[in-house]
View 1 (cartoon, one colour):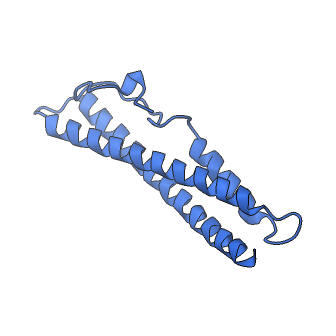
View 2 (tube, rainbow, N blue to C red):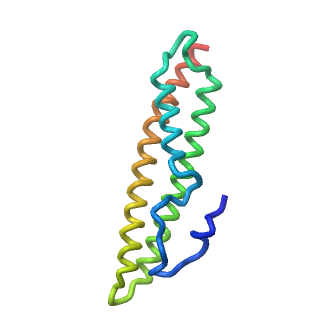
View 3 (cartoon, rainbow, N blue to C red):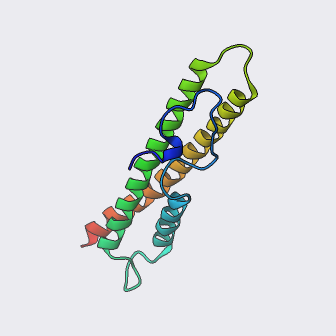
Length: 134
């Protein structure tokens, strides 16, 4: 999946910056985290326990989301570098606004990635335990 049209190419140091993430569906990482948390709250054994296949499916979705967030972070870091290298005196408000927006997006992406990795780690351990019982 390539970048959306609005993100395709450089808009220069004063180009418009959208607050929305570059990755596909806004909030998809939150949905994956919610699904993982719900699975972690379910019983570990018994009829109400999730199947190994369902655990592996959500792990796969979680890993895919983590990769998307890592790609998002890389794109933001690259754009930060582009903007920083293009700064000339006096610094325009557009450049400052773009740097601030990019920094906020980077902080958000890193936070979401950390949260996702934490629940993925817990689910991975539970999946291993489930395999051990099978």
